[in-house]
Image (cartoon, rainbow, N blue to C red; front, side, top):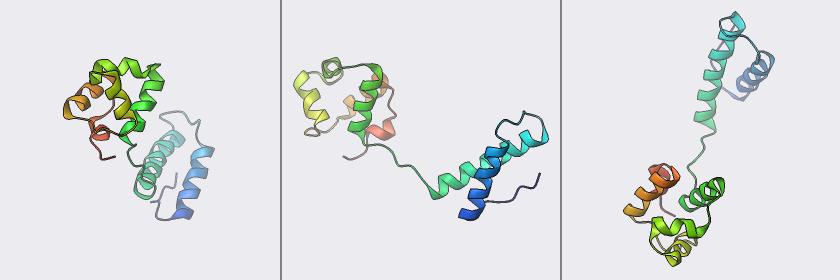
Length: 118
């Protein structure tokens, strides 16, 4: 096992190739240990060089509704009125703090996503 830091794109590509080669290694073996350490290094490199931003709050709501099989009318309980649901989903009205709390509880969307500007 020869592991070294991932400092550039070439190191990253080599690490990905090695990960692919030892992907099925059993835990507790030398290759299993190498796999675990290499995965951590790759994850750190990717988080630093390819960060993924948070989704748009309204798109997150729509996505979660789709996942849960919900329709706009189902959100009337959260927002109070059907017309308000339409205004929110069309970005004509901002989310209030109370709405953010209810959406977090109902749809399990992180509050950090819901409180962003849009």
